[in-house]
Length: 232
Image (cartoon, rainbow, N blue to C red):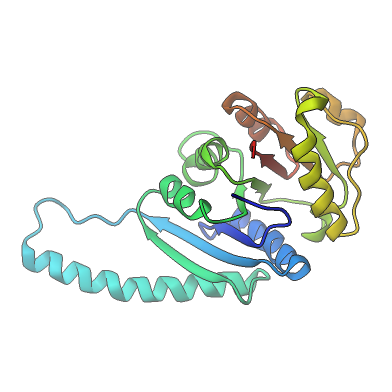
């Protein structure tokens, strides 16, 4: 069961600009909240079916050497982007299952998206949508071109919910994060994208009790950081 403020944060990375922004935001949270942070990278590494036993043995030796180098690279990526003390996870497999497995014992997932369509969305678009939909822990999604400092993300959260009665949990999470950074949650609750026009000062939207269609709509239409809070 996740808790807020988060004690454990997971940051999936593909080494692009959006992942760098996610690391910076997680680093700010680590500094303020004392949370532990793990950086996760996942890749599919499979030997072709026609490989001989000797070829597979040789490939496995190469994998072990590459794994050590990859772990060092992931740690260095974290240090460059505000996470000097992050743990490192390297998963052999597709990103979504790897992220969801690691998220099961995390209080928060912080990941990047560029919101593009087509093949370029494989890691940072469609993956973010699936993780948001399937994760039982909250997921904070940031864009690669986020304005201002990482701390500024939590200055003025705005809660989004279909109705006020379903926003209590999201409001508690938003209040906890905003107060840690000296911010303040907007008094009003937004019910649709059009409401954002009346809240131009918002720095983060906190989406309560979302379904798959709701998550995809916000991920594809909103340029602000988005925190998706599932039902407890």
